[in-house]
Each structure stands twice: as C-alpha cells, then as structure tokens.
Amino acid sequence: MLDLLLRDVRALTLCDDRPRAHTVGVLGGRIVGVDDEVDGLSATTVVDGGGAMLAPGFTDAHNHMVWYGLSLAEMDLSACRSLDELYDAVAERAARLPSDAWVVGSQYDDFVLGAHPSREALDRAGGGRPVWLKHRSAHMCSVSSAILAQAGVLDGTATVPEGGVVERDASGEPTGLLAEQAQQLVDALVKPYPVEELAQAVARAAKVYAAEGLTHVTEAGVAGGWIGHSPAEAAAYQLARQRGDLTVRVELMPAAETLHPLVEDVVGLDLGVRTGFGDDFLRVGPMKIFTDGALSSKTAAVTQPFEGDGGLGVLGDDPDVLRKRILDAHRSGWRVAAHAIGDRAIDLTLEAFEQAQREFPRPGVRHRIEHAAMVRPDQLPRLAALDVVPVPQARFLYEIGDTMYKSLGESRVPWLYRHRSFLDAGLRVPGSSDRPCVGTGAPLAGMRNMVERTTSGGVVLAKDERVDATEALRAFTTHAAYAACQEHRRGRIEAGMDADLVLLDDDPTSVPTSAIDGIGVLATFVAGEAVHGGESLTYASRAD
Image (cartoon, rainbow, N blue to C red; front, top):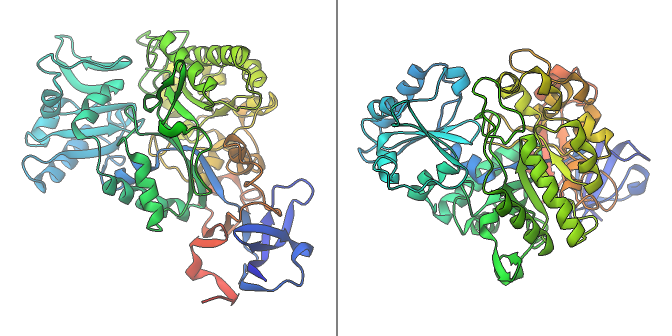
C-alpha cells in the first residue's frame, strides 16, 4: 500500500520521456511511479488535486536562512522612501527600547533614499543608543557613533579586516558606513548568537519557505566571516530539526574561515568532515569563500573602472591567500563555492580552479561561482571547460538593476547576470535568491525575472539572456539539484525521486509572464508529507 496518492493533478514532471502526468504515488518518502505505474494501487492517504498543477519542489541554491529568520524579527526599512522616513522609523523603535538596547534594522536602500544614513542623524534618532542598519545588499551597513566607539573606530584602535572599507568624509571622520569585511567590526560586538535564538530564526524562515513552495535550500555560508552568526551555527539547524521545525531540506556551506589545517596543505573541519557529510535533511555542502564585494556598493573587483568614481572594487583578501584557500580546499575533497561578482574576481577564481584541476584532478567536482554577475564573453568557455556551476540571481535585475546599469555603463550590461549564454555554453543554471539580500526570495518571483529581465524602472537588461518559463522552472528544480550533485534524488517527478512536491493554482509555463509571481502555492510536500497547506487539501481518504 502506498503512503500517498496524488490524483487529478496536472503534473509538470520535467522528464523528457513523460513531461506530463495526472497521478503520483509515494512510498517511504519517495515517488514510486506516475499514472499507469501506480494504477490499481491503494494508499493510506489519497489527495484529490482538483486539476491543480503539480511540480517538483522548488530549490533555492543560494540563500541565508538564519540571517533571513533573524531579519523577520528586525525593523524592516524596505518601505522607507527618504532618509527622514528612515530616521523616524529608528526613533519610533528606539522609544520603545531600554536606553542601552540596540536598534537593529535591515533592507534600507541608499539608491531610493538618496544617500546612506549618517551616524550623526542615527545618534539623534536613536537617542544615543547603538543603531545598526543593514543595507539591502548585505555588503554594507550604517551604524551610530555608539557602535563605532565600541568597535574602536573612533579612537583608532580598530583593525579593519583585509577587504573591508570604513568610509570617511573629507576631514577623515568616519561617516558610519562600513562595507564588506569591515562589518566584522560590528559582528564582533554581537556574536556569537545563542544557538536557541538561531534555531528560532531557522523555524521562522522555514515556515515562510514552505509557504513559497521551497523544499530545499542551500545556506550560503555558516559559522565564520561576516555571514556566520555562531561557530556552532550548524547546531542550531540540528536543534530545529530535532524539534520538527526544519520543514525543508538544507545544505550548509561552511565559511572558508572555519576550515583549518588538518595536516600540511590539507584543510577541513574537525573529525574530517567535508562536502557530502549529513543525511537527507541536513548535510554539509561546499566551502564558501568571498573573493570580492558587490556591484551596488562598487566593491566588486572589476577589470575596468566603475562609472563615476572610477574605482576597481576590492578583493576579499590578498590574491595569493584566496588562491591557496581554494587550492587547499579542492585537494582536501571539498567542493568550492566562490563568491565572485566582478570579472576580475571571476578571473582569479577560474585561475584557481584551473590550477587545482591541473595539480589535483577531480573530474566531476562541480565547483561553483556564486553570483557570477559580470562574466565577459572570453570567460564563458573557461567556465564550461571546468564544468563550473554559475549561480546568478535574476531577481537582482528587478530590484537593483537600475543601480547596476548606472555603475557599469551600457557596454558591460550584456555581461550582467547571464542565463541564456551559460546554457548555450553547456552549463546548468540553478535558481537562487541570496535572500535576505536585496529583495523577495520567492521562487516564482525569481522565475518571472529570468523570463523578463526587467528592472523596477522598466528597463530590459541584456534581452538576449532571457529564457522561457519552462527553463526558469528547471532552474529552480532540476538545475538546482544538479548544482548540489543531487540530480539523482530530486528535481523531477518520476520513480525513485524524493517526494518533494509543490501544488500550484496555475501553470507557470503557460500563464502570461507578468502573472508567474502571482501564482498561489496550495500545498508543499517534503518526503511525501504536507509541510504547508495540508489542512486545505481535499482528501478522498486520509490516515489519522
């Protein structure tokens, strides 16, 4: 007897030999067959889909789950349209807090506000309290004088990490803006977070993710650097899972800083843990390393100057240090996920991958370049030769595309967050959001952006990089599974695959593109269990 039978559905299987199905059978958390393969089989639970669309569960190949969960408890500044609005929001929050409490907010946008918040204004709005406001890109933050003083910036005792920027005005005074690795100066004052607090953040995020049809996410950096929240961050995921709060599958990327020498030139985590360790719900993925910054902050490492100020961005560390970290991780059995946005950073990353494969060949390793935001035409065949997985975020084109266009100039726009060119080169392109950076992380919104590539200002960026809606769906399903080396387990609806499924109220491959992000998620199944929407399903029979 089957555990679950889904009938009267319109399934997009994403299998070439059987692209559509109407009945899906599940046993032991796996799909055992579709249509005639399950004819005549009874099931403990039978769901009548009423003609709803069924697709493989969505995957976000690059997000920050703990960070997002924490942000849900912070002040949301995304709706602020002026600095005065922002300062008013800070003052309102501060008035409800003790005199020594931190005022924490996220998602402010200097492009919309006209400038970054100044520390003097934050001092006034916060009543002298520590004020920490995180930029929507996550590559910058603005802080008040109280935080700069605690961090040692005001008295000159602070040591700014390599790859960090403390902005100063014409007189040499800090403005309160900290970029890239300089954010570690603030992190040192608040971290590590208690594991209990992080587990609660995971639970909050998981509830949202399930409601959006996500069944698998990759956490892009834990336990180290400015993206980690605790050396014991993985324990928070384990705790959430033990409590039943981790309703999506998670792959964890340890930050490069967490790897340490085991023997000469061999790096890893204690007990020899490396890529692939874990189980069906929680596993260790690639090592995450930052090679540069971001386009919105003009800290991405580029070969030609940004428009306006003429800067070339910054690398995340000394180039030789970055190369050695990548090489050592490769030879130690790790997949590498290198954050590389600017074309200069991508050059450095490709050189390191090429050297790694020459000296220590590992066919099929599938290293990744996170974001791969500015890829020159000459870099495409190098990516293909290495079978590197590029992980761009199409949603950025809508949210901050106008800012990126202004920073890069028209001649470089064709390089921006490519998609079609990657596919034409023979590469797989997974869907991802980088949530909570920039904007919404909903997969259906990301699919729409892959198809349209339109900015919030109505400009189409690199029209030739558009893909159709079916390819966009593959990005968040089959290609995302490939990026995690799990294409044999998920991403399609066929026998043997994990029963991770999403029931939708319309077909994303046939509705007008402007309607894709408005499609409703009726239910989400992980291992055949409804983790969202189960109470609204129509049951022909149901186990108690």
